[in-house]
Length: 217
Image 1 (spheres, rainbow, N blue to C red):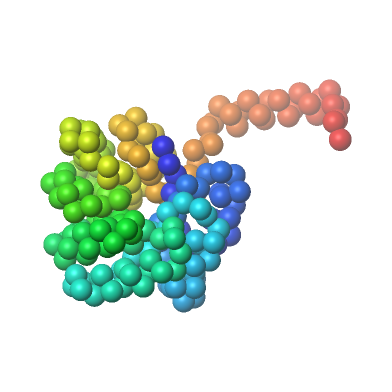
Image 2: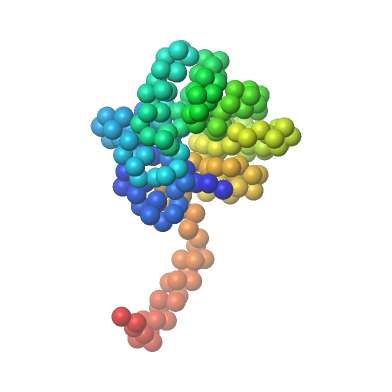
């Protein structure tokens, strides 16, 4: 499974990238706005740090404007994935941009039918939003499973990018079901290393070390 980090914070991206935990980055205008910097400047800096896909989102609603924005974003770097919404205009933009050789991430997916037509339109990635479905008492993981089954039935090449990840359990279940990619905030990715028994075992080990006066350095 590939790990994308969902942030525009440069230091967080560098830290995880240095550990080999970053296969790509997802951003959006809201995340970049928090930095107070220019969207194109921040996106270029991220593309220079990671070698994998960096999703950069359009801000228009009509297909013609999305296409124009997507072409501009794609010029930032070779690893840009243009992010478009799963609307009819977004699908039109996806088809044009993907036919031109650009990676396209179709976002805000909430149904298997939406994922099916996004794949037909040539999406590189489909981003089903797990957490937001859970928020309205629907099963986000069930959607991932449905999309996986449909894509496997017809050998679609579109990669399932599990998004709106809120917990480490979302990551575990996405991996079990067979999502190709997850994108999560840095804090959630770091929590994958946590376990209370690890903490307990290390605490006991350190007490033994101190009691025995063991030193290596």
